[in-house]
Length: 261
Length: 291
Image: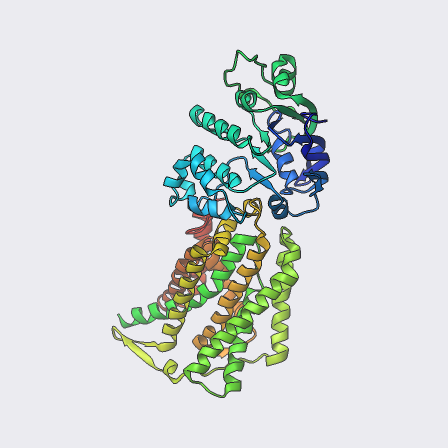
């Protein structure tokens, strides 16, 4: 079940199951992420996208196989998985609000030579706000801190969870631009409900429903299939010409799993 | 006026002791979510260790007192590190088991101290200056109060410096806010857990030596009696907030002293009432995070 069969996968997930408070939120999920480009992890609200990401890095209890660059990592604790080359950008930013921007970034530095210059070039605004408490930043600025924390280190893969959630259109474009730039050097598994951004960035797509994988393949082909996107995402599919933001605001939870993600 | 001044300084001295216990409790709960009922045992061990130093040295001079402070802090730190590493580490996220094991440890520690040093209070001597008083605005304030206050202020400043200016301090501050995200940045937060327990134990051990001079005795129950008020201070100050613990420690102790004097010995009742009011109207405490 590869999203892009021509690339050797950097991440292989097989038979992944995860539970939160005794409730199964990820069920026998199997997919791979190629070693280049952006793969979108799609699905309606509450189908297990965020839980899948958290399960990959061990933030929630899970079973199954997780292989990074050919090495099994599912038995490792979260901090070791991250150190083995995973950059994580969580849903809702999760910056440390009582730490300054500079402290947030310093905390994330795990390489001997963190890529401070790259981060300064990508996010010049953060440099100017380095002494500001991260909790006082706008949502967009907090997202930049969250992305910067992941990009400071050399990673084998980035796991990016809904980076455009709740952001103004201009900031969404900036975030998309940053991700496109990052994807030139590192593969990304992207959870994203803004289908405009998915169409712009993603090459492969993995679609979840009810905690299970129900579709994998080319992101563009999937988005161009109106019937399929309507059925799996609950939104009208739009063709390449109709690229208006198709945020999944109308998606309704129909899955029996029902866990808040 | 002199009564008010005396009550104020007595309250500040007691508040210093509350802070030394509550500081560790607050950081431990804030970072790890562990309600550490064994924290009083760290204090008691520190107090007995400090007393043993003085007894074996056969001296009550300042050097012996300073050495007893160091040994008391080291004993508290070692006991706390042992507790975290051997007992608590296996039980993170299992809050009921944590509570039971720390409660059990506190009871076992009291029994152990009873066995080693006996159940009767052991009276303690310090430097002669401790027995004197200093006159402030007509009030004759016992000198040991000043020692407690100065020690607590130094501990607070050292802790703030550590939290603000070191990488581990930064990890602890971040972990108090969002522990799983610290882990998700590739940081082994367990080292910070051990460190926070050790620092908290050292402060409690130091507090134990000072408490023995404040009250004039050491007993196996010393830690337990202070722990109850330290928990109240921790909740009122805001779980995880060091500054909140400092402010609440002073407020609770001063309130307690004034209520005891002016309201017919109702200090403990007034403190519990204050706790109830905080829980009703500001459940996150004075400086705690809102959940």
